[in-house]
Image (tube, rainbow, N blue to C red; front, side, top):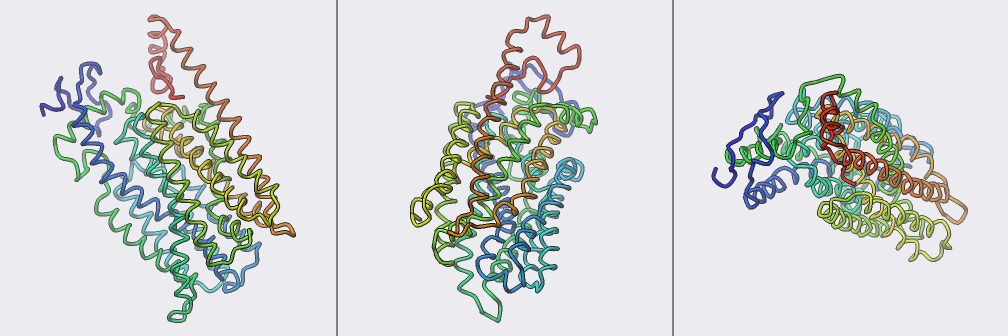
Length: 489
């Protein structure tokens, strides 16, 4: 214990009111903390990333299946396909906030494997469906089972990592979005070669194999998912004690009100900055869902054949992943969010301006534009989520903020299938591309506004005297409205 103690302090995460020590008296050995974080990254973050990757693969493979013969096999029209994309979201949006609030009550180690097994079996079963109506039902079921997944993963990460450490870890989690696009293309390319094997079409093999792989990941999740650091099998007793010290030293605001309190939930609903963040999330998700679902169709519209298209989308998404990881590392290092988000939104505007204006026969230019658009979306949207988490303190206020942010954001799925369904005579998805351009421009404006709003609140608190600070505390200003709380900008 000598490497983690200067003052002997202990706290129990399950307690509603953990013992509080003077933060300045707590010494944590930097090397011991570094080893602890490395183990958490290896054993926890990698597990959560694998789980979220499975979710995104099973959700977004509809785009790869659509250009590989699924529509005629199921008797689907283009409007049916747009409706199928949309039908994932009514159940997903409806059950996302309840899922976020249930995490603490039911426990992540039970809830997450249940969710994952449900959508995995549904995905696997989709490979054997014969009608459009059956496919519609599968989309509703996948939306239901995936609804609470991301909020639960996000809450789990905030238990193990401090706000200053979260952008990098959420980058690992969020890269699942990009990896699903890249790996989805590779899987589709490989599995389409099984077309006709055992009398099963290639697009059906895509659902069957990906569903079976996800069932395996659900089993791994059931075996190793911790509820908190006290139940983490991969941490030694001394490392758990180190986590307790970190909880006291860093989470002065974030561990408040651990027992359910309706007032904490209402605080989130009344918070202006949450609704600004949720609006950015909604607009950003229009962009994200557009590329995750329709990138295969978009690239194919440049004049490439089906098989080559599956390969060409892979480097686009992998580039987005690598750029986002680099930007999130830098964002954590300098503790700034908006300065990364605004240029990312502008990059998306530039990319879609190219797609809207450059002649279609210049397909190399159109293809290059995708390498500008996807990294920009990932950086803007991923950091917006982390920025939102950094700005809310108190377990249930933060859990509610996560649920609201994701629920509002995922409402984008209710419209995305409708704006990318029509092509011009030359094959351009002009309606979807122009809408995305406008959405990205609006995001840059809103991010700038949120930055100035949070900066104003920080400056107000910087100007408080000792007596004014005490009055704030006496009137019950806790969590992220505490006079000592500062927003990361």
